[in-house]
Image (cartoon, rainbow, N blue to C red):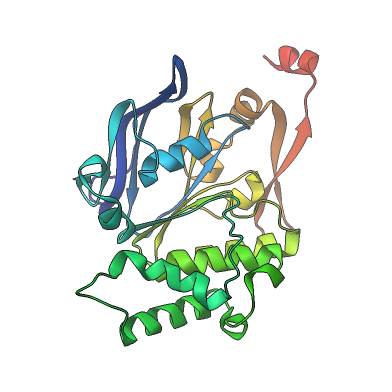
Length: 272
């Protein structure tokens, strides 16, 4: 599926006819997507639709069988990991560590792509780490041991470490997974307030409404792309997610939200 993004936007990350397969099973197929600087893109779809695979292809963690990814106009396959990490950061679903390290130590690891024998740790690196901790509201926990943190705090540390890379593009794979609702809302507010281009896979469709555009995945393909209220139509919700959905208006602030209902197989056939 092609991407209708306007050509006058500054594209920072894009892919053309992207495909990835394990043996003869295609996990992602024929995806073209262009992401403009400052955009907030949500990737949604049922389990097994290819969301995580697409993110890993965009991050350069996996190599496509077909097509290519471009970062800042350069082919990703022509860049080394250090060059990619200086521009793009990826936060996995459940990145973890068993090391006995502090919050400060964990975030400092984000500076690794910028360090070398001729460019050792400096005051600039201290400043970047300090700002990253402040951005995720964890400066007061900088000396805490990793193992003492809650799930929400650990996720914020992962984001802080990614921010310490000073990336222009931030990819997140279901960042609210395993968090309680208060932590989920706080984390999404944090991510949307960051001064970077963000691309994140999300399960909760109402949470995805805060994105500028949604890429809807189904069976490894991109089946819809555009503003949330345009692409999450009743027909799309039925076809892709197997649910009935309709838009409701919040009487307090006028915000639109989705009401979703389960459809049995018989009901789905009737709707078809």
